[in-house]
Image (cartoon, rainbow, N blue to C red):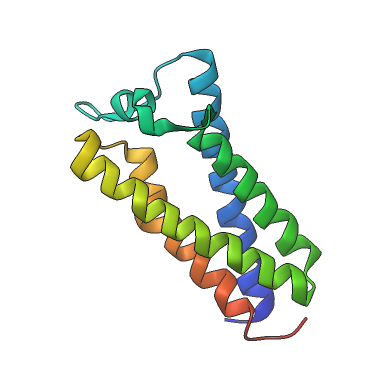
Length: 136
């Protein structure tokens, strides 16, 4: 895949999940239930003590991270590439932690969260990491 293709793919992934994180953040502050599959544990996860860090919803942290990656992919300098890859790697590690919490501590699964934890975070980490191999 070309650098342009990697850049576009990373931007599209970040933009799509920026929207999802914004939706989950809105649901948190509006005290609304999120759209979830029947029998899903979205509300249980959203209402758990692990859904916030220092009073900030985890989804809001996702908004910040995805917006930052989107901006850095657009900026496209060597420093921006490194910063985007670092944010994506931290996001992947944090997503892994959150997945473990859902499976073994909260004992509930949020499909939005799992989609991020299992598919999107690794994809974004790979896409941004691959971009480090080429120069702008």
